[in-house]
Image (tube, one colour):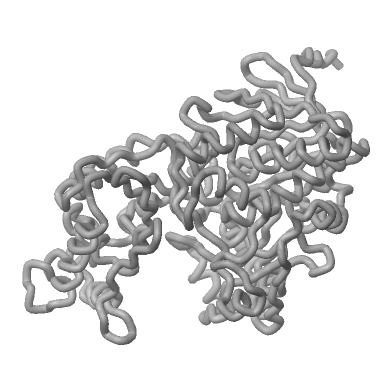
Length: 527
């Protein structure tokens, strides 16, 4: 056999994080702080990212501009009984990040987020290298020892964190990843991707008024011009037109006007979507149009800027993977759609409409071989046991844009009622992020070891920051004690959180009946 030339090591680190999504950065910070707490010195840490750090650090929250943060959903009764804030008691590191980035409630300014993350990394003396590609991963036995880059440098490490949506480092290290929603038997199906855009010059009052006028006109069948527009948005289908019209009012018959909060706006109806698609000449349907202006989640930023999470693009699993590998850059077709979005928003009063640098890619498959995979049914059962829990998180099983083929496949298995899909409130652990066969690697992302519906709630940044805090502490323990990440238990991490006063309140809720029903659904869908 020819001799395999091992690349010369450029630099050696204790912990290397691949990708700059916020949960990964916070994990790296927590790892460095924990090691420093134990050893009174900072470990050598490195952040490697494919994107351009000059455009901001922080993945899809920063370069992807996702300013409207999805926050934990905690029922009012639990909040009152435990004296919790609106969003419960998030991980200490996440609360610190939000405070340092100046988040009042929901809106995250990407510029402030970038500054906060850079400051946190600088405090722990982390190195940052951007605009990179992996050439190969070097292993000794099962463990990763180094990452060789296409530019020729090779960086060695002891523990590795992968926070990319597609688990790209894990894949390069030989970890098997299921495509799309293969955990539902749908390997080609994937969640829609979004290109976030910002508007200026469109005041909240002006926006409210524009929507109110559309709501009045679309619900008035005597308004023939508005009904023609609605018919275009319905794809010429009278039943779909009725469906769209009915959805413009609530159960009490009142118009579903948008709700403006402290630093955010929730768009409750499709009135703006109907108007845009009528202008565009396409149906309000992701499946038939390929793109859709959905109900907007709008973050209110400074200087009259509104950040819109609303524009969906249909992708399959291969496209989501390819987009992720191509630094999450929007395609020329996607940018062409933005031209129409810009024109329409200018027609309703915007002075400027600008899309961000990178796409928000919600999901791109899931790794297999996690130490302890996490399913949707386990989330509904309350997550990890209270005695080893690191925090609690609640969220809807949110499949924005839908999973192509799921309803048909479910119906074929005898499932037509999805009443078991209540929002879970579950306790957080780290074992679904640790990899059995690569014991010094963690994957903290929507691509972690999720099964079935778990990835829809498990893809949310706030949850992954809680996991990241735990993985970071585990990595600090691992390098201090010469162990592997996969050996560290939830209980060991919990002990340190408790010792340092960083343990969040634990209030996961077991819903055994719904968990059992969802468990049956997930098991049958995989088969």
